[in-house]
Image (cartoon, rainbow, N blue to C red):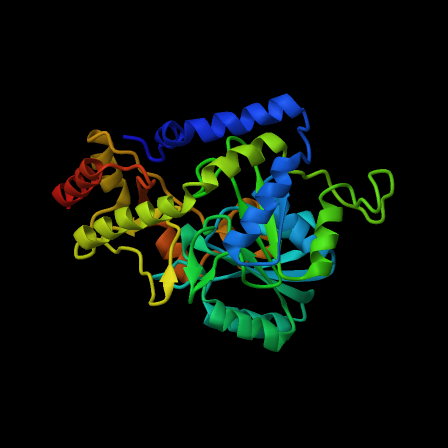
Length: 372
């Protein structure tokens, strides 16, 4: 059994993928070929926003978002502490300071009440000018945008949605990557929508921001590639990766349905024995990960039992960002975010992809219940 099985997906859509790649090889427009424009149109339609702009990877997408909003030295940005390193790394890459915030214990997403507390504490301490909130739609579940949007609006802060794991999810009928001033996502191969290398995208309803982002991703380009109107970066999504993503979009809706079906089976069987993911009313997860917490026995015990049964697991994330050595100068240390610190010692994730067979899901469930 594989944790994520890209081979099964490829076998299903092999003709679409091979045809798309062959077309790029034949026309030779490897950068900004027609596949990129086609993909951007389809991504914007899927997310339900005006603009989608491809880039080289999800980390660059975050950096480009911050650059487009003129966030840099002398500024601070609120980020959740329980997420992948890149969320806060992007803040430091533009010279701003991350302000780490705790999470909600059940959703694993940034806690709106903790955001308000962090804003008040930051103001009292007289730190760098607070400019934005970066949310993270962790494991595929959109953050609480009803509450967080109100906070950002009342405080005059930009809102950036890190949707690296949530493309395909939704909240109240709105699709992930349609919230905030700018949203970003990643097309790392294991994501719900992944390419065969690195790739990313930004989304915005704002025409002016979209124009700036398109310029920034290509060396600050103006009217042509030899006219540069700002300092940017080289972060383009190449045509081959766009071709792969166009092929995968043809089955993406069905795959999100299949992910939810797997998640429903896990939850129904495991919720009385383990702490299973909470999906609030009106939310739909893209299920980038299916993450549980053990009751009583350690996660290492359960991971060991599953490994003996030939079942892979993963841990996302073992160390909150405020305890990472790279952020030591920007953290109050252990105890600053107690929920994330507890959760990070307990969580582990089960195999999750759209091509898990019923027998495989049963095998995972049976192994966990036997170990409990």
